[in-house]
Amino acid sequence: MSKSPDVDGLRVATFGALASRPTATLPQGDAEPLFTITGGRVMVNLLIGVVTVAVENVTVNTRLRFKPDAAADTPTDLCAVTDLDNIGVGRYLSLDQAVADTLLLIEDSGEPGDLIPTHPGWLLGPGEIIFNCDASPTGSIQWDLFYIALDGGAVATANTAGGFAVSATSHYSSQDLT
Image 1 (cartoon, rainbow, N blue to C red):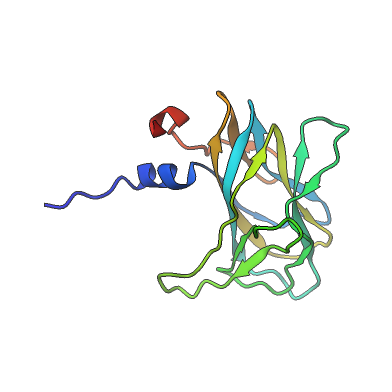
Image 2: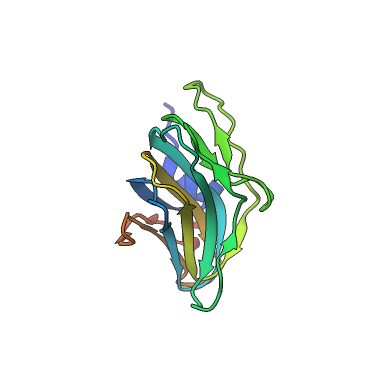
């Protein structure tokens, strides 16, 4: 008799805890906080978005940035400006390995084995991962953040549109991995 694998346990062991941001419309000519990191440092292993409502056919310059807690600090780019013009439902967005590169836009063919490259990780302290958009297009994206807490009490929390936190972190702690 075969036993089903513990999918949550495998995911946590491979990628870390999950903070999932529900689908939301693109920021309208502004910056929107996607995730807030509190309590210490985290290693971000994977940040991936999926388009849930197609982005209209207009120039939509976007980028992901990290804004440290210190008010005087300016945001740091996590990728170069990327045009999301005419991106269809099911397309994935992910960070490339170099900050100077644009967001990766990956087609979802619906077939097993679609390649979604991952970056080697980002060490981030307390602050916000924000999504900048220079236009006011239609379209929605759902985001997932996989991370490992490096300091006791460090956690990443997903924000809904408008910046309100949602409780979407994994029920596993870093002690579950030892």
